[in-house]
Length: 495
Ligand SMILES: Cc1ncc(COP(=O)(O)O)c(C=O)c1O
View 1 (tube, rainbow, N blue to C red):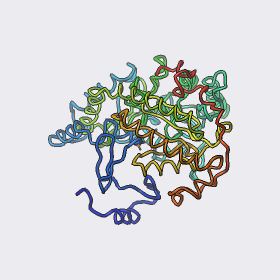
View 2: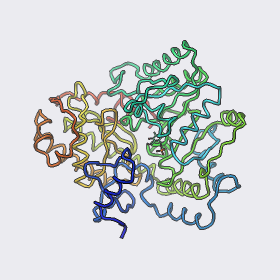
View 3: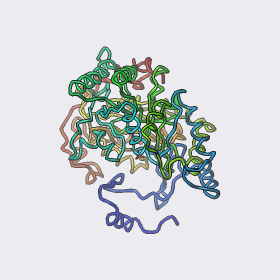
View 4: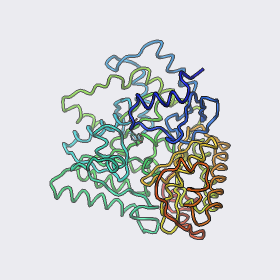
């Protein structure tokens, strides 16, 4: 009923007519999804998949309240924001109310990329500076202006780093430059930003902005140490720049106790610009930049108007308002807190059992499982991660692996994810890890290349042998937020 073509024809047409750089999940064996509801997706044969990765379908796939709001408004009016309309102002008012008071001026866009591009324009107009400090492995969008500041992209392609871009080390206390054994990783990482600013000034360059996701997602589910953002903001503002918090992936209550992820860092940290997208419209293209009156006034003083044909249209705004209502009415933040804690607890038990798990980190329904071949060296288990996501797919659980080494299993499901879903997901993972570890012993290479059913689908990375150390479990004592209840950072960060 939901199909125009059989799966093979869809694939053939896709190969013919869709640009080859647009990749599908599970490229070796793609899934055709024909419908979805809540946290479940269904293929053309009716098989149900548990969706652990879709943070866009934030309040649940095809939520009836969101669908109803869109349909109702589409029947009445959809037009651009040059006409007065209540939806856009109501939505701006409601969004601003979720943020600290000084963040009160909204610009609506259609995608996270448009929002970040505009954020850069706002920052550059503010003081007339050009340079941008970004974090290593960051991804901020697909527009040229954002590829320039996304090492996740320009690091892989042929593009070279532009002169106005400065890359600071990712504040990753598990495999970054300063780790859990460092006395003050927040200051050490922030000092790297300070050094960058000093070097830029020596070459006559001026900093317009520091941009970072409040928790790095594509970069491997990284949670910066408490105090890092405060220090960075101080240095950047001292240099005449602004702090842009990219909440495109991690906003809208995903972290549970807070609506915005940057709020985990305490009330004394307020960015100058916040960008948001993905979950905002539950799949409908809605995104936004929110900033201060001062920055907005500086932007308009250039004399150039900002017009975005679809940004903030009555339908998008109605959808956005419905999403906010559902988050509140269904207590999805509370759900993210409860189910996220339970899931982290289950995963930590798995960490104690499986040598492949090096680190569990996350908060709310934003969790990463860092797979390693060797706990001492933290050698990324890249091929194993790819193997696991294919095996999980066979068990009807959708997961992805990302991070610079593609060894971090990312969990960011719709916010209606339940404890039963968490248990089911972890049971499947447990089974797969058990088979993998039993069959490999110390030599993961053999089982993956010779014994597993999906070996033909494995990527061609060369697997180096590693003997995981069962005794050593460094992440238990590390400075990470949710590795365990007693970690240092969990005491520091207000989660
Ligand atoms: C952190 C972050 N910022 C911005 C974007 C760009 O958003 P969009 O794909 O809606 O343009 C993405 C997309 O993945 C993202 O992950």
